Structures are given as C-alpha cells and as structure tokens.
View 1 (cartoon, rainbow, N blue to C red):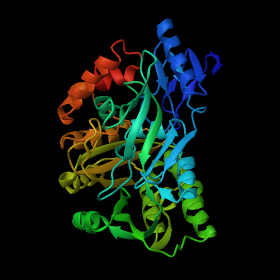
View 2: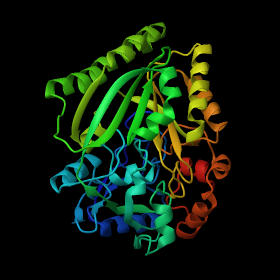
View 3: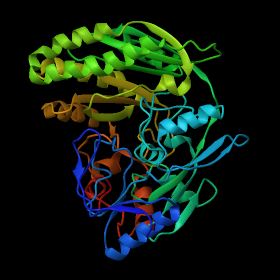
View 4: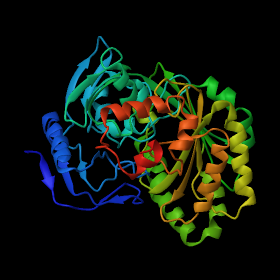
Length: 438
C-alpha cells in the first residue's frame, strides 16, 4: 500500500482531554488508497477510525486500531456555479474551503465560529453556527462519497443511495469513512456584525425578538455577573467596512486569546478571583459594528484551550433553561471563568442532527483546560436532559444509546442502517458503543 504509514504513536485531541494509541496511522493520498487501508484493516481484524483536526472533546475519533489521517485527501474536485455546488475531499480544512469559495465569488450560507476543522470532521459531528433560517454545515451537504467497511466507494445523494445519504451526512464516522463532500453554496455576501453589551434579564426577556429579528443572533453570558455580550449578524449590501487591522488584532487576538489565557490561568490557580475576572471581562466587550466577507464575520481565532459541553434544547425551552442555569450557578460554589454561549438553529431532517424535527437553541458551557469543576457539567447536564436536551456529538456528555433513542425520532433508522452497512462494526469504538449501542 503506497499511503504513508507511521509506527504506533500517541494521538491526542486539541483540548488534550482524549488520547489514543492506534496500532497504525495511515495517510492515504487517494480514495483508492483509503479503500485499500480499510480492506487491509478488515483482513487484520482491526477497527478503523478517521480523525480530522481533533477539535471534538469526546473520544469519537479514538481507536486502538487503524487511525486514518485525511491530510492527503484535500483536493478540490469541482465548482459548479450553475448548480451552486462545490465538491471537495474530506480532509480539506474549512479555512481553505472558505478561501477557495471567496476566490470563486461563492460562500457557505452559515458557519460555526472557528474554521480549523476538516470538512468531514465538522459535518460528521454536527458542527453548527447560529441562524434563524440556515442550519448546520451537514445540512448544507448536497451529495457525498463514502468508503464502506468492505472497501467499496459509494456515491450518495437524495436521488442515489438516498437512505445512506440520509444517515451519512451526519454519520459520526459510524457508517464508513467519508471521502468527499458536495456542499450547496451561494454567491458571496457581506455580513454586518453588531456587537453590544446587554443585561442577562434583557437578553432573556427579548430572546425571541432578537433570534427572530436577526439572521444570525448569539450571545454570551458571564457567570457570576448580570452581563452578556450580544452579536447580531445580518446581510449587507456593503460597502465592506472591516475592523481596522490593529483593532481586530487587539480585540479578537490579544484580548480574546493572549489576555484571556492569562486570566484563565490566574483563575485556575486562584479560583476565588474568578467572579472578579468575570465582572471585568463582561465589561471589556464593548459596542462595535463592522461589515466584512461572511466567513470572516462568522469565525474568529480560538487559541485558549478548554473543554466544552453543549446541549440542544427545543427553542421554546431556551429561556427557562437559561434561568435555571443561572440559579444553579448562584446557589453553588462553582467558580466558572468561561462565558455560556447561546445560539439558535431551524429544524432540519438529518436523522442524528441535534436540530432534527424541532427549532433549536444551543447552550454551551466551557471550562478552562485543567480546571476541576466536574459538578458544574453534571448539573448542567441534569438541567438540559430534563428538557429533552440532545448533546452535541463532539462535546462532553454522559448520555447513552437508551437516552438518545428517546430524544431522536430517527435513532432506530440510523442504527438499522449501521447494521446493514457495517455489521462487523469495523468503524466502532468505545464512544460509538455507548451512544449507538453494540
């Protein structure tokens, strides 16, 4: 096999909270080599997992078998302006996809807030941004190519292998290794971002108005304070008015990464200082408005390492959940340095999408890496599951297949499809055994 193979080594994710020791690491340079790697693993009786940039906080990509790195699968297969699609291989980072689209005068309709992930890693775990009418990255998939457990390379779309398409758009790596993705795209557009502070009571009281009245609305609440920062992104006819380079560096890099890292380290060493840090931080974010190319507004650099839990709840439950969460923080002795992030998404039809069949609010909680506050995540999870919450597949949670079958209407459809295409569980690992069952 001509793909690059390395000797056994230790793999860890971005946050450093998940590690694995694969028997072998392969970096196929073509779909043929990927197919050979999978059939070779089957012959050796070894499991296979593909890993992207390691930005999941769960062990979804961990394996003691064959670890597939997609670094060699980054080709741009084609852009179809008339159809409004772009087809790229699975290992292409979102950052390069955005640059490619910008050069072609095109754009994704919506994005998350970082773009370091690979296209397959991001879609397979349900990565999303915030949007009144535009959904996750996986919801923007129009077709895909996947290599199954027997090494066959299968094309699927709504009209070709439709059942496999329905499952594999957001497939957790459980059905095969995605090798190429066709995204629906649109003409490039500008977004105007309006960022402004707001009190917790005001933003929660006006939540529906803000979420319905803006194309992309999100906010951050700083625990131990009444302070929030809100962000409203809406399309603009221009002209572009990006942040001055120094201002962007100061706000989005120096303050949000360098200074914030220092503040988090102080908070980890001296937890009693965290409420004071939170009050200062909640006042640091001030009003600002700028207009730029869409992906530059959707995303920003994130270098402070943390661990994260995020749950999707029915949108009508969002304000109830947020008030319960705030009360839980106030009556606890937790010291929470990271803000709580709140976003929205419209209902979609992907079987394992956190927004399947219901308009959704996402509530994400974070802890600085190395912080011992497990009871915070435990209580957050208790609140979320009391409201039929669905955990983000790539973020920390303790749910199992029994719970998940109760909150996903098409859970049984997905597991039946998995039985069909991977009966020997070539693509299984401990995480998938927990969330999907044996």
